[in-house]
Image (cartoon, rainbow, N blue to C red; front, side):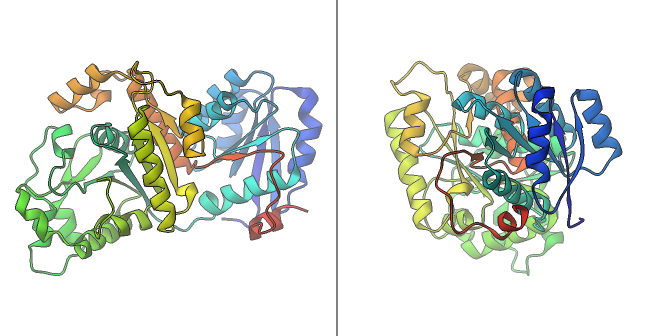
Length: 398
């Protein structure tokens, strides 16, 4: 791409136009293309012009602007999105992020915050040379729904990207990924481990099970004792080939630390830790994230997904979870246990049973966030300035 980032501003508040434009134009390596104020005008601009990044001014009607963000994030997946607003309440920040924004910058705008937000977008998305994205889904405890989320997330990513998404069951003894799709794969990861020949792309492709939904599966061994043949070296080679073959790879990973999982967590672009609002599970989630940090996994690669978020068990609130984990919740998935259980029992993805189901909508939003690179998104005012600002941050700010 060009050394210049081509950016535009979506703003429905004329009185803010001059101020916002001045901040954006103060950034180096940025070419300001246009300011627009209607969805039609924005769509035309994105279709007709080279635009890498859109700034969305949420005020004074955040709900309407978030709807536009949601549409743009689905239709123009290569375009980065940054939200700007005076409202710094948690819900006001989370809404645009869940719709697909990469970053959130609080007003009044600090030019350093703005430059750093653009720098993060540039380094993670626009200037990235990584061919593939690897997402680990791991439960903080058994029975929290991590496998179901992994399966439906892979499907949503495949649909949104219009490309096959690889899904790997790394619960080598008791995995249930194939059951979620009601399929009986002819080959498993054990066949790769026991082939006795050099593992290559052609061999892996012949072992994968392609589903009509756009997901390609690599499942756990059929027999329990076969899991011993699947060594960490085999898993690592498999993941290398998948990363060279597929744009998105979703891994259903057991929540433990051993010779198999530690290298997987280290190579993941994003680790989604699934939990529920119950004290023992949140404590496990905290311990799990702390262990990942000690292993050297950056905090921005670890996100918390609360499943069955509106269940009536327990006494915890979303604020309790955020205070304990010391970071925002990445996503909340509502409680519809009976429907999801039926989906698993009949081996059908949630979307195939009810495309408007609230659980399906929540997982689709996660897919959008994952594909947009959204992680640890808030660039807030009033925080200490980091003297170790990135190169892009220094270049973008005058």
